[in-house]
Length: 372
Picture (spheres, helix red, strand yellow):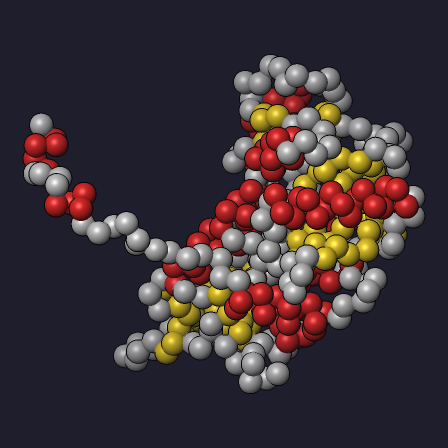
């Protein structure tokens, strides 16, 4: 196994609000694999770090002993040269992506790795972009006739969204419940869109339904499409929260346990009826095909115990959703091995210049004539 992993690296961190959670996921994967650990800092630099480090080593920034690494599109990863030395290429041919949110999950990093010729786990550029864009993903669900609550774009000038409040406002391109707020009216929602730092890149608005709760399921695509056990994540009481405060699954609910999503409070398997359970699994398989899921993803639903609504997809879930694979059981090591096997066997891109045979160029005439 060690020989098979000699060209594998786990990438984690990144310039994202979910940086810290990404570190937790990455360290879990590094520890399980014994692979090379590549840390992407909050400011965008790359370092190779000791894979035996604990999470607290990253709390104040760059851990001790980190070695600077470069990522170039024509050479991949390389250890940065000394003052008079030459960069040393790292034998990294496959990357296990553990970056949550931001450029690690929206297709940006995926595009760079495609251009560098490095295989990677998880979504392709297109699938990553769809999964990160709540408005696009919601439109895809509605277009396919799948059950989903109405969702609209929101900005400070919005005066009508076509459905009544109360409302829940979310970052269009964010995750992990950061920046999510419940508001009573559209005027408040629009003002929030103009003032919240989490909504600067865009916002979406949906009806807030107090009667609905979350259920989630894992999807993996190698060696074949499979759906995990269904969980119901549990919402904890908010410190100092007033009676009747709107309940949402918050950032602390998901990650405050210290191991990412693996330690979050949950009911697993969820105590839901067999009919609803079958619907969750059937819809999850359909979404996997529509959204071009690759690797391991987590699909989030809302339900009242009878009706079901597709909510969001997380294409690189916390702890890689390892805790969901209990029936039949899949060890974390096996889950990671399958991710690596898929990364190598199912390339995310196939660039071609077929058709670029020079015919258009030979008949183009002068550029000057086209500018006249």
